[in-house]
Image (cartoon, rainbow, N blue to C red; front, side):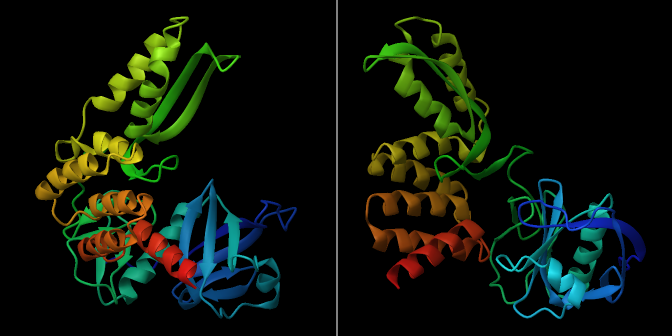
Length: 308
């Protein structure tokens, strides 16, 4: 069993705009009681979570943390969090994870980053979601992605295989010359969309054709065997071809009947076609497969707030 580490570290605290509160680093340390920053204790019990972001460690507190005066003055009121930077961020995060895993009655492990996931107050579902690396593992901690990065596409909102996509525009259209290559980070369906939108236009000058074909090939090759129809289903959904998309999602659901992201994608498809009743049904199926699936919980929270 892992023991709580005890060590000292130097750190700087930052505002949400990444403006440092200190000129020189301050001293902090960790022991079994919690984290000490310049001699003031932050109890592990007052911390909701710790998250890496852009080289910084975001310490998010519960509603009413017991903070000393100096620490409270660094607290970001808007987010109820502290932003710190240290050369020992990974060690600090590990100490917190050990505490969480030791004090939870039920824990699970992320199959990608080995992050301990507090499973108290969660339903016993087939899968679990990791808020640290955004991956989905089954209840035994096994991943299905074969090392590929799958997550919600920031450009389209669908669960997909992610990577860098290039949009080639070398043509004359609508009385304007388009002469540029734009780089995006998104899913396979984004690469397919760029192909359909630009291949015929790029034929005018031919320069953008090779790149457009390469992006289309990359988006359609080497798919995970359980997700062979994923990019095509996402693209069909975005084009409003709901029946085709639903058929493709159903094929994948037959292979992975409880996988939350497939139900999530189908729910998004129905939501975009203004069928909120069916959308909610599939969002619920998503949570039945993974009770802590954050993308589904966020959409349901939005729908609830929208209803007032």
